[in-house]
Image 1: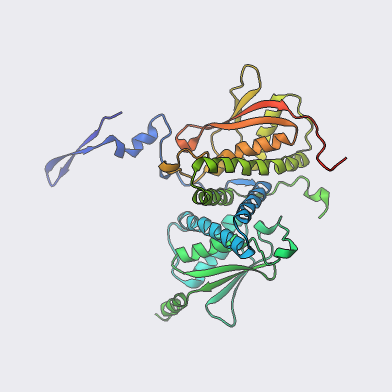
Image 2: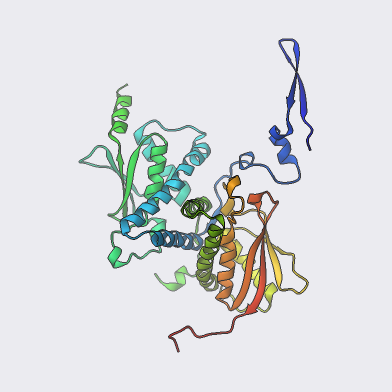
Length: 215
Length: 178
């Protein structure tokens, strides 16, 4: 398997010989018997695969337990879940923009928020987020509301940890998606009308968006 | 919520949510622990914890009875794969004595979008499934061992999970109960 591929090509009438080592011929690798093709050689899945909710619920419960074992306090636990969410979020950006938007990103604040509320939520949780609101007091702040996040469905919060909302994982996802697409923000989860995610953009983001509108 | 209404509906979630959540957890574990083998072990434990609770869900939803032999058990686990992960692995490679067999998975929602970097090639990424099988069977008095023989993430054609029957556990009263 060490044969090189030789191509003869003509550049401006001059014959040029090009030697391509076997290792650069990825198409040949994927055709060979052993499945050594890299993940990028495979077509992107449609993302319609499904697994049972029980499976996810138990997995998430293990996730929370793992984070809890590693942390002493509720805020620490929330931070860990938030960080995990961010790991998920950065991976979703490319996946969803390539799959749902043919690689085209958003440049307007409202559009990216709608992308999160509709496209992302629908792909990830099978339905849109319930509500998106703009804060009355602070123009940098938006609220995304969801009555019953899927991660909270089977979680009963102990009384001494009543401030814990495991949907911070989802807040982490949203934060990573917004920040990663050029809209740096802090996203937190709160118990309010179900769960409310508070999205607080950096001031520069809102200022830039205004500039964009004026043009 | 009445019992009858929730009995048979197997609700589904998008598999990528599970893939990525699991992936994020594994990545975090690798960051937290230096030793890849420890992560593999922890993943098996994690699967075990899930298995001991999944079996109850499985029994409640399918209303299935006792297994007559290990072949029967293998078929039941096969249907559990279908129910929980949406895949249908083949049951093959029975040992001559009939106490060992394999599940061959040609696709696996857990490993979609996943690539193992070269420096952690020894990680048993799917150990959670082995753990879940062990945990679930322990709850129905079967002591088994389960491990991965082939792994698509390491370049094999399929993922093969081996299950070996060890012994039947005797019914023991849990401590503190009569």
